[in-house]
Image 1 (spheres, rainbow, N blue to C red):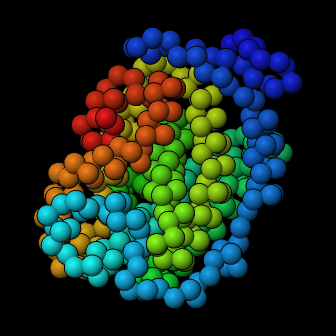
Image 2: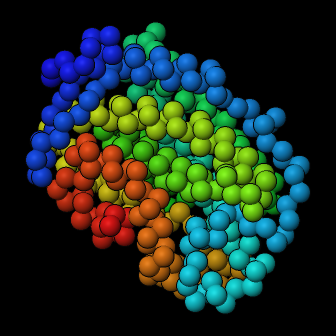
Length: 319
């Protein structure tokens, strides 16, 4: 590595050798990143108990998600639903995504504890990891309360997801864990950035998603900077193997994010509805759009190198 910018910025460059050529990464010192993120956290953190109007009325004719984000939008099944059924589907899908968010944030919190345990405890890097864990605790409580306020119960991952989650946290692999963090956070961030500014949606949902977007931006920055540092020291075979494994996991996650009960609640056969969503050009384009920032960053750091790219494309998550 060589110094690429003035010393006061604490930056270096690293070259990642990919099949399409060399990728040059700018690496910022961990403590510099942590200091900025901690400063932002002190200024822009929220308390969902007081910053969300949980008593806001829920109009039965008002959507919970932008209809374009509904998994069946622009399919014959969507056209066959009444307006109230479409609203109900967005309510169910919102709560399904929130349930998935709680599960994935629990995995992230365990990963951050594992990561912090291996670092210098008095460092700013660890201080921010612990700050992010506190954020994620509030987010999980907030999502759970949102689901209850919508009159529903959280859904649990299926047996395969549950088992994979348990296995993942028996192994400390920061390369996969920080990349996986970006997959989940960038995906939900895309959906929520379209949700919170939309004044036609349920007010309570808009408040929840606004809080999550603001605080999650820091988490994405932390994960990106750490992944760049990890990629810079990983061998090409190691990086490509991790990237392919993550691509398979992402393909599975994307197909399971809507719980089957969401379809059954509006009178649809869950198996038929899932097939319709999987075959929908609109849904595939929406999912590729939702992952666009993640895949652009993965391209930059060589995480679409080798077999990983084909897996993302075949899953309909990369154009």
